[in-house]
Amino acid sequence: MARYEPESGAVVRDALMRCLATEHGALFAEQQRAVGLDASDQAVAGTIEGMVRLAFQQVGGDFDHPTMASLIRVTNLLAERSLQWGASADTVFACHTDLTRRIGMLS
Image (cartoon, rainbow, N blue to C red; front, top):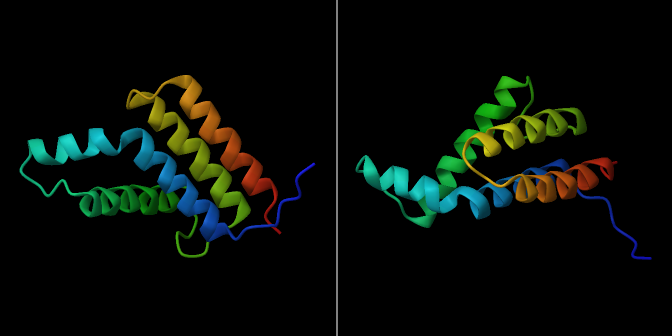
């Protein structure tokens, strides 16, 4: 059985942003191009970070110092939004499960 080392909240938060980029990066780039904005990978990453920062604000958390509780609320909130943006339930479930496991291991 593999042994996992605890991660920091920031590492889990960054994993959440990678999940969003993997699933929705192309959609966000397309939307940004459609309105004449920069659609580079860096610009899309900035958009995703902004969305995650806003999600932390909406749940009363701190993006720069994420806690277990705020990560749970943000993960749930963004999973719901991801489904609304057209992600498959299987993909959202896989990311949510991985993130929840990682959050549960925070010390």
